Amino acid sequence: MDARLEAIRDTVLARNPGEAEFHQAVTEVFESLGPVHDRHPEFLEAAILERLCEPERQIIFRVPWTDDAGRVQINRGFRVEFNSALGPYKGGLRFHPSVYLGIVKFLGFEQIFKNALTGMPIGGGKGGSDFDPRGRSDAEVMRFCQSFMTELYRHIGEYTDVPAGDIGVGGREIGYLFGQYKRITNRYESGVLTGKGISWGGSLVRPEATGFGTVIFTQEMLKTRGTSFEGQRVVVSGSGNVAIHAIAKAQALGATVVACSDSSGYIVDEAGIDVGLLREVKEVERGRLKDYAGRRGGVAYVGGGTVWDVDATVALPCATQNELDGDAAARLVRGGLLAVGEGANMPSTREAVAVFQEAGVLFGPGKAANAGGVATSALEMQQNASRDSWSFEHTEERLTEIMVGIHHRCASTADEYGDPGNYVLGANIGGFVKVADAMLAQGLI
Ligand code: NDP
Ligand code: 2IT
Image 1 (tube, helix red, strand yellow):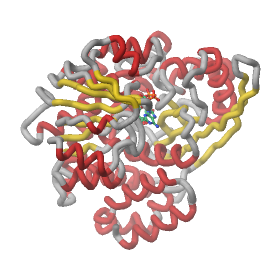
Image 2 (tube, protein in one colour):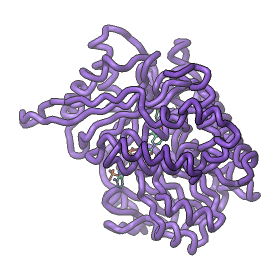
Image 3 (cartoon, rainbow, N blue to C red):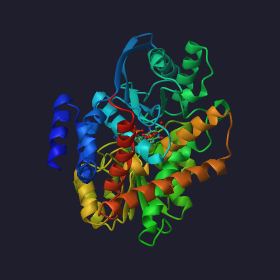
Image 4 (cartoon, rainbow, N blue to C red):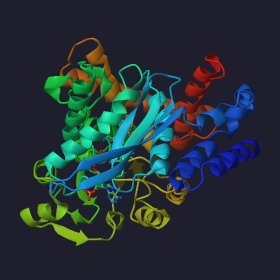
């Protein structure tokens, strides 16, 4: 890492102790930014990096609620409003027991650059709670969401901060959150949240957008090697929102997706995953992958272990951060891996990324490859602002244009900085320069 940037990075780490994922995300971005600061010394003079790493606002709050047995439960809520240079803070809410400030800050930091890459007018933010929705009834989830919004509402708004979903937050949760916001504020402010239901201000394609976008981005990478998804053997991790739609799109483009996972294990379905059955089990019944294996013949269920033991030509990590380490990366490379498209945020460790890059594997980092979700959220905001709703075809066309555009921006930035094919460099520099220019123009704030 450039020595000037390393000194700034060390100060950031010391100021934010114990936040390992935030440290990792900052380090990874800083490793790309040396050449930009050679060309733009004004960014150093204006302390752009120091400012970028300090969130504009961090909100931590108590979320009290009662469970179905009448017992009082207390969770912790977060919203980190990281950077508003390009537009209102924008980013999802994660409900998972692992959530703490370091996770919210890593996600919020990544979101700044991701949102910049989309070309849409959105800043970066993220939030969530250590609430675990697993095994909770709808009524419990509703009471939790209502309590969460009873504090959050005063910090958000269509021109201020626009949350959406992430792990553990899907259409059901967005519905309860929107209902409580509307009740407290007495405003039908559609643009305050995205990922809404289609009859009350949601956008077609938003549920599919992250997974579809990841596959579109990966297809663009494959094209640079004269190939496509046709005939590829694909492994996907996770079996939630992003994974399901990545599987569907990859198979629509002619690939066979032979494996996917949840936090308990993984399935191997050599015939290609039956997306209809997967959605029935995961989305309708809120069941486990083990149930999928029980219902479909010829499927192996492996409890525990790692889905990255299954050979693939294309890997799409769509579960969570640091789920694919250096050893797994080396195994995948030995098995004939051609490309990786990150549907999740920071799923590959820094060691894994190094293994992929050294082996010449096409590697699309999350902040570029999974930007289709937030980009379609911005399309939802456009529809809300104009009180309009677009067709599936039109919206998917916009998503495709945006993903092709992000691929082009990353690839051409990597070329410009003398490292063709390095999408990590292209994404980090491409996102950073846009935000840094806006911050310079807006003065010392
Ligand atoms: P979901 O909650 O719908 O699904 C998450 C999936 O990942 C589940 O299969 C879950 O398994 C698995 N998973 C979660 N945490 C862990 C863990 N600690 N260890 C192993 N498996 C785990 O979330 P999404 O599909 O929305 O999100 C997946 C990833 O994509 C996240 O990294 C998210 O930040 C990212 N992302 C999401 C976007 C969106 O629009 N939703 C946009 C861009 C990125 P189990 O059911 O067993 O918990
Ligand atoms: O990580 C992400 O980009 C998301 N969870 C989606 C954010 C959004 O505002 O749609």
